[in-house]
Amino acid sequence: MLTAPTLAQIESIVHDRIRAVLAERIGEIPRLSGAEKLSVTLGLSSLDLAFLVAELEAELGVDPFAKLVSITSVRSVEDLVRAYQQAFFPELQRGGEDDAMAAAVNRAQTRRARRKRR
Amino acid sequence: MPQARKVALVSGGSRGLGAELVSGFLDRHYRVATLSRTKTTFITNMLRARKDRHFHWGAVDGRDHEALRGFVKEVGERLGRIDVLVNNAGIAMEGILSTMRTRDIVEAVEVNLTAALVLAQACSRFMLRQGSGCIVNISSVHAIRGHAGVAVYSATKAALDGLTRSLARELGSRQIRVNSVAPGYFDSDMVSDMAEEQKQRIARRTPLGRLARIDEVANAVHFLASEQASFITGQTLVVDGGITC
Image 1 (cartoon, helix red, strand yellow):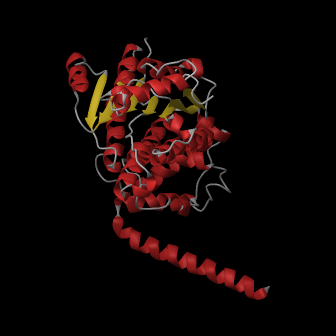
Image 2 (cartoon, helix red, strand yellow; image 1 turned 120 degrees about the vertical axis):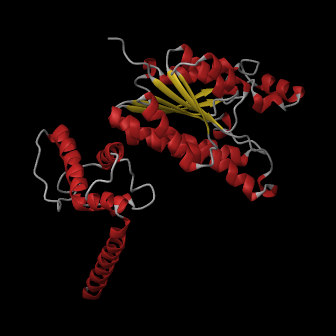
Image 3 (cartoon, rainbow over the protein chains, first blue to last red; image 1 turned 90 degrees about the vertical axis):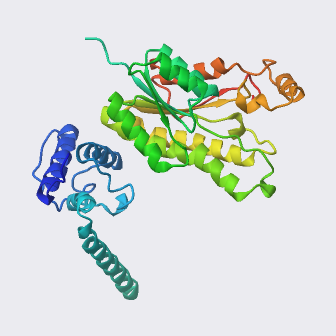
């Protein structure tokens, strides 16, 4: 891709690639909202995800997982979309980190509350 | 319509086993890409002889991860695909571990292991998209038997065999095979400094009574890269004249 895509274009490309993988795996092309979990909801394996990353690198020319984002932080379709959006628009990264931090704090608080209940 | 030539990427193809592999793949009608730190006479001659698009060379230092990734990308874009990766580049590192400089240990790990990991990662992306591929890691008998004075080298080569087994499991479902070739002593730059007496001692300990010829090691790689090895993955093929048996 010669010029930087828009946020909407990135989302559309990522969704299309996921749907293409799903079409090959299960023969149907579901509509994606973004909230779907790649593994739990869509049944994608880690190798499917590796294939997706290779396909998206070929199409978009970037690999956000080389340095920017850890692949283990990607759980949902929108996580994957956000990773590519951040690769093109680094200014989005700050918010992403804050979200990740907030999510981590939230998880830690939940764990602490569970331990107290025991 | 004739089938497109397959593409093989050989690391460290400027001399020794790497150069033998480059020639062998070209003889088998592959298009070949290789990388090395310096342009040797072999590379100069190959570039002169193969002015067509069947041979490509890049000056890349194995410790430079970005350059390694960039080279793979360039090969993929220029030649259209990557069917075979041979992780051949390596440096011999001899010496007693307790007196070895840390920077030498790090360099051996970088060149012998990390570079292979980076190349396998980058090439496997092309192979995943193609739904086929083959990776051959050049290991060593030192990965199988312990020898004093080669602890670091042994560690890096044994790690390559571990990589072979795990990566074979990771990529098998996409028809990507991963194997190792573990050569014993063969006529190459790595044994050129060895005393004649030492070479004779190794030959005496080898059931076949001699060191290997370089083509005998290369042939094992070509076999694993070929369709004849289509159901072999995750294995280490030891080519040592029986010295480890």
